[in-house]
Amino acid sequence: MTSILYVNQWGGLGGAEVSLLRLLQSLPRAEVQPALACPPGPLAEEANALGVPVLQLEFPSLRRGGRLSATDAQRLRKAVASSHLVHAYSVRAGWFAGRLCRQLSVPMVWSIHDLFRFPWQKVWLRAVANWYAQAVVAYSHVIQRQFGRRLSDKVYHIPHGVDMSLFTPLPPASRAEVRQRFNTPSDAPVVLHVGRVMPFKGQHLFLQVAQSLRGQHPEAVFWLAGDDSMGDHRYALRVKGMSEPLHPQVRWLGFRKDIAPIIAAADVLVHCSTRPEPFGLVILEAMACGTAAVSANNGAPVEIIENGQTGLLTPPNDGKALARAVHTLLANDERRKHLTHAARQKVSAHYTLEQHVDRLLGLYRSLL
Image 1 (cartoon, rainbow, N blue to C red):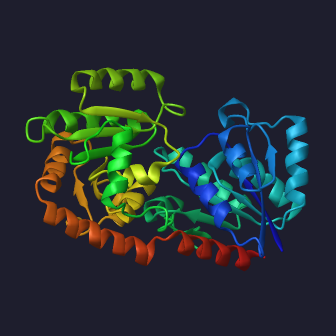
Image 2 (cartoon, rainbow, N blue to C red; image 1 turned 60 degrees about the vertical axis):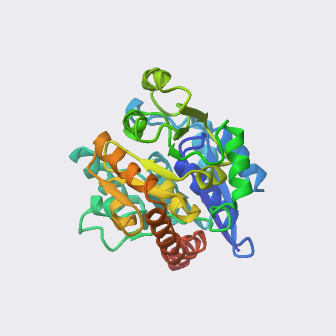
Image 3 (cartoon, rainbow, N blue to C red; image 1 turned 135 degrees about the vertical axis):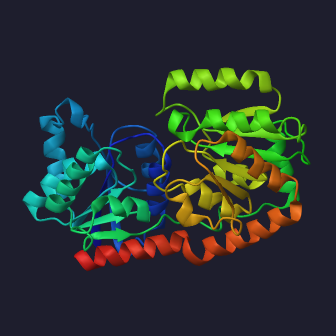
């Protein structure tokens, strides 16, 4: 039995944390005994519900000195020492756990979910990976390229995976039930955005799409799923103000744990990040659900979507281009069905949760 300690710097539920929970749920318990170190909050609660032991710690900001309290440092050291392997699931976690792993000769896998904008950040990232990590998990090639050629032997491209039994097309009756929850007619075109409410995720661009399509598709309804728990509260107030003139076509759904049926009940998912996206798991989830995906042609979505074959790509930060792409799909049911069929086949072939877990287990075994 292999004991693996997962370490995460945030106790909330963002995309990375949801991915971590799905991994913890899918690990073969006959082979792996997982434990989790993270701050108090929803992540710890969900992990406990899965039967995963949780060590609750507070990870301070690296910009403010970056030192654990003496008590937390001692507790984390003890947890690392009792593990066969540590998987640091966030950037800050790699810093705090990595030094202990080096001291105690415990191998560390470091997951990187982010793209770094400044050269000094990449220098720091490479230094930490070189000193403390035996392996780095890069979920996309664009993340992988941040590490350069010198570290290519320890950086592994292991994309996220989707649970195809959870993210699956819904029968008409179930779609109608989901839509009814949000006061949406069963036959109305539904366009969806999923993401934390923050400038990077581009809710303002999504609202521009809604505004542009009101004339062509007056019956369309626009759903926004997500909250500002890790975002920008002022931005959230601004975009919610932008949406008021679009009432009642715009619906704010808030944070949703039950996101799979919501994605499957929509016709088109719009992914409009304003900077290069490190991965874009929700794109894969939409593809698996039979929901057409439109994304900015920026970052990892280019690796996932074959433009015109499994989805549509548009220039970054271009609300009008996004609107044209959405109109193309809403106006042509046959083309939309062709894209969604090919998209689900692609996810099934390359991006399942089972494939993701198997790749990680293979990496773990190679380090033990």
